[in-house]
Image (cartoon, rainbow, N blue to C red; front, side):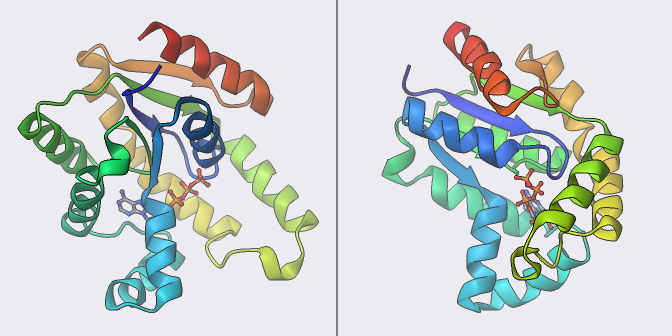
Length: 195
Ligand code: ATP
């Protein structure tokens, strides 16, 4: 399977990044993670990185204009010609609408939108476990219970409303994100094999 265009949706810390990386390897689909792109900008100390750091640390969303521009640039690059997995984008209905326009302009369409579903209570359990196990140095500034609460409120209020948008288009597949990591991957392979 090549040339698929897939979106990963799911709550913060729900495992999107891990699964998107696995699909990138298996199907040569380029993983486009807006979280990784923003963290790279922060590490490089660009203007955007400086603005983004405060927003990310506060558990808020970077503006739609910035994020749409960032994705538009990447989708045009040749390493995305064989398909891509979007991880962390779109995060708002306006971002989803902008993506539709972007793809339609290029004559491209989405193959699948996958929701990795995980209850809030399990996400809190995971973050507590991670904090207990991790070396102090490896815990990100945005990795704490307060920030998780804020990010979940934004997820439910601004990101989850995208799900019915894709449901109406017949693109949405829901996967139980509480299954073991390998079992989640098998579910995804089943979905992508068929779509
Ligand atoms: P994972 O599930 O892989 O742990 P995550 O949901 O915890 O990922 P990232 O996707 O890495 O987090 O995003 C980190 C932060 O970057 C977000 O909380 C937000 O502030 C910002 N961000 C990332 N993508 C977007 C976007 N599409 N729109 C607005 N802000 C974004």
